[in-house]
Image (tube, rainbow, N blue to C red; front, side, top):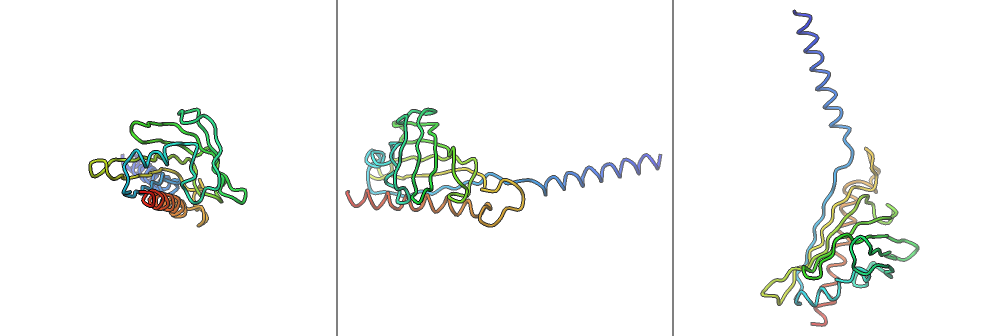
Length: 183
């Protein structure tokens, strides 16, 4: 009986140790970033600038956008040219002109360009102040650029979040400046 209890206790301790080891060995967790900006322009005017998935000329980091499929989900694709040979390939998977919203995912990117994997994002325009102003929200979810444990600093969770936050902030600030200058 004592031996059976000792064996049970040892097995229980071994299971706890294995579970703890598995928890410590867990790989990356999905990161999320949300940035927003209020723009002193009606939603339709803002959407007219950002609503075409094939045109991201409003973002200062984008040198050129090429693509196909218009704004048709699961058909539309675009390539963002960042200059110096750096590109990002993206695919549209949701689009609603009525709701001023679209969602897309990155199909291909060099982690040296943007240190993320399995990235998806939504860009949307919401009416504020009885439709006189807009709130533009850009949110994304992704994994860090290094999928295994112990990532190098440039491919860590923090590096991924910092990079995506920088992309969103730069784009939203440029969009606000562009629209409010013409308002």
